[in-house]
Length: 111
Length: 113
View (cartoon, rainbow over the protein chains, first blue to last red):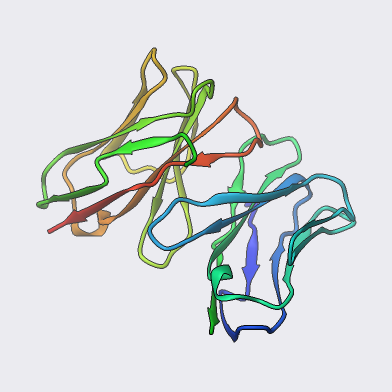
């Protein structure tokens, strides 16, 4: 069974702090996507990483794909209340076009 | 606005009933996906259609069924509803089948009483 494990499941921090959330698997992925979902809305794609070791930045968010393409991380610098939401990773295992989804990290940034 | 529309936005019904959720994908997208999300849970993939044909099945109950029509809109039918079916149901679309970006609709919140 191919699984994507996200950690932590829940994180509540103060505005201005830094944080990192993780998406891990024992499987190799051809690509991996990160989505953010705000309460009552559908997920929205933040980034897709494809190459092992790839780093992508989106303002204060930094995404990294592991060298072996089995894991990814999302680092947020100086978190703001607007970063609050459910962060989901989704990956396409090698040889399988179907995306599999992690269970998500629920992030709350307190003002 | 993702370009994906879902109706209705809210639905309240009783146990044992049957409901139909509707989704219109983004213009040009051929793939439609259905997901279920229970309170404070992640997304559970139900089923995917590509250009009218069923492409992949996830954890979809036998009481649930779906189809994609020639105009590419899709419907998810939920029957013999149980209290545990209460959840947000999302439709997503992508340009074609594969690990492409999925664009999500606003969801239908189903409450079974």
